[in-house]
Length: 93
Image 1: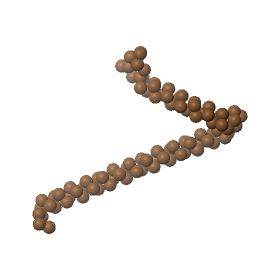
Image 2: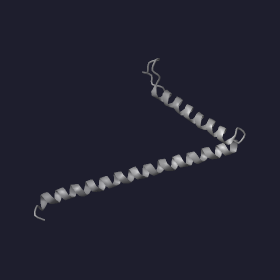
Image 3: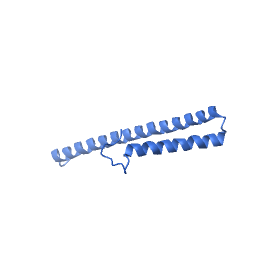
Image 4: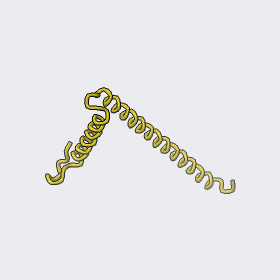
């Protein structure tokens, strides 16, 4: 979806991102074809599948790590809050 407020001289960010993605993906495909041979389409597809699995696995791992960090921060925050309440309630313990 293009930004309706973008001026003709300044393309919308979504359009720029799509163009960068297309150029990057095209460059990867072209390099794989050059490395593996123009007629070796099955191997190119296999390599692309490996790249996708590696990227998606890393993406999911990154999401799990961020969720774990958020969970630990919430636990530490809850423990800290209860310790502050305890310190005010029982100042000598």
